[in-house]
Amino acid sequence: MKTIYLIRHAKSSWKEPVSDFDRGLNKRGKRDLPFMASLIQSKQIVPDLILSSPAKRTKLTAEVFAKELKVKNLKFEQSMYECSYSKLLSIIHKLPNNISTVFLVGHNPGLNMLASYLSGKNIENIPTCAVYGLKFKCNEWRQIDKAQGENTLFEYPKKYFKKKQ
Image 1 (cartoon, rainbow, N blue to C red):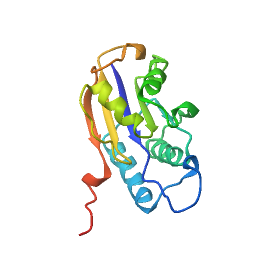
Image 2: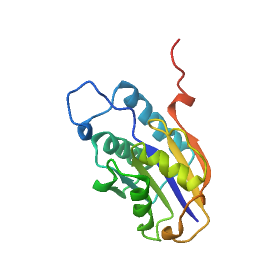
Image 3: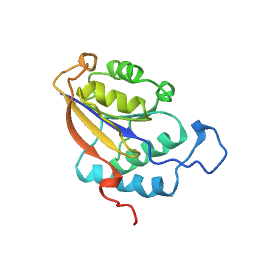
Image 4: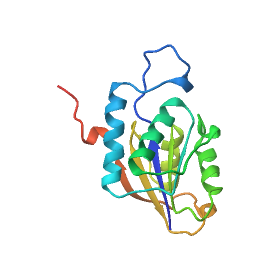
């Protein structure tokens, strides 16, 4: 059995004139991130590996999840920045088989397209700071393919924080 949790970075800030790669988190992102990490911790979900894009907003997101879940195996993969779902699938296929559960912390549209591809369903949007879980009935990462994933979790901040009227 293999499990993937797709985590979109927390809400980023557009206030500072920096490159897309260097954008940090805004106020909502800083509120949502510890809440979501704590929520996942309360569900006793702990990955063997957290693999993240190295962009500032994804790096910050991955680090908070790693700290909350006490995960020491955190790696940053340059090719995950602005990559397609097929590149993410290639990264998954190369994971060592001794890893059972992985968190992929990245960006849309790649994460969204990967969730749709792996689940066989049209996933309209993985919102910022959302966690989308998929389980696979296989023993090797390279066996994971289209429409084989069973959705086990879809949590996102707006389920818990309602917009102010």
